Length: 231
Image (cartoon, rainbow, N blue to C red; front, top):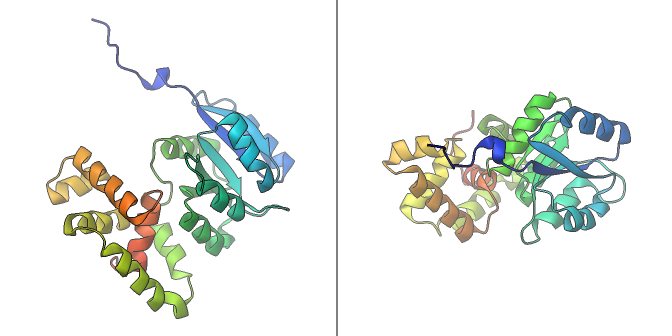
């Protein structure tokens, strides 16, 4: 009997908007990613100011966003874009000397970041993961970013974060902490004797209660609250 289930081969390509002020980098990325059947570069921009119109016109699933651009920079563009309903996911393109900028972008709702010299195959994998709702930021990188925030602001951030987390039930808080530890849903379920669908339901409720966009923001909030040990 023929299986009618939808396979990965049947899925429509993930639509990508590429935003970078360097035309050579845009051309290089477009050429490198053109061979990936899973992706489709639907538009390009050289300034963050172009993003709203291109998103409206091309409806990308994921935006690859540079940080440093003339006019409207990638951080401002990300904040404005993620504040809109039904916004596409955003992956920040960066060099690793910009940790504090990446942290700001993650707090604005970006799903993660990629270094500009990331191999094409890894970029494809990252875009597909983000399109499926999975962040592309490892727990170790999250902790490294958090450690760069000024010490003078730490107590205030901790108190604010703990007040927000107090809105959660005990079960939701347990799950949030494990998200902050970088645990995938299947491991969270095993630890708390829950099914994966139940874990996903709890995470959706956490996002709604705390007015967050994704798991990365849950992890950052848990780290702010001091509920996950620093390395």
